Image 1 (spheres, helix red, strand yellow):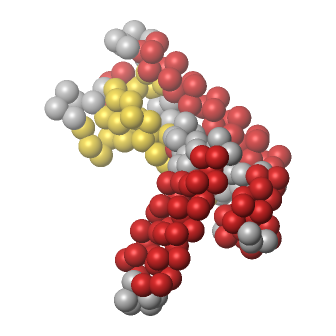
Image 2 (cartoon, helix red, strand yellow):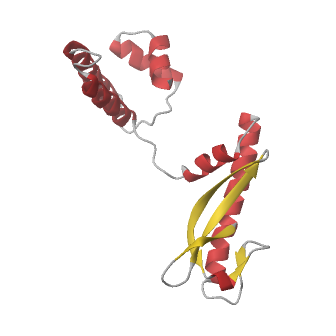
Image 3 (spheres, one colour):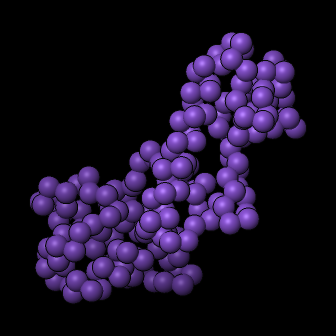
Length: 176
């Protein structure tokens, strides 16, 4: 953790940033926490215990450290190679909601509508809308309206049967 002294607030507080270094490269992000430069202990990356809010802020900083270390260990086991930027992105996206498949499909349809008349025709846009309606109907009848973007192969098989297309094509479209 380090203090970003380049910008100070009206209360003379600076933002506390988290710096990740991995394989010689670094990435940093704002923790959303602030403190006075006078209260900051740069060697340990924490606020002096005597300062107001010190325990609460130091606890949050320790929590960030622990979560980053756990994420690093997990990524190292699963990915074998990781970067500081990858860890930062994974950390910042923790806890954010994943869009449902219906929301993702709607976004695809909207992007196709924007291309209508430029690179694709009306019939293609209509086919995307119709396929989305069939997809939504399948999800509703199977009780999967809140299904997230990660789906199982058996679910993809059921959807493929419902839409009368092959599982391989569906998976390549869904996982792309």
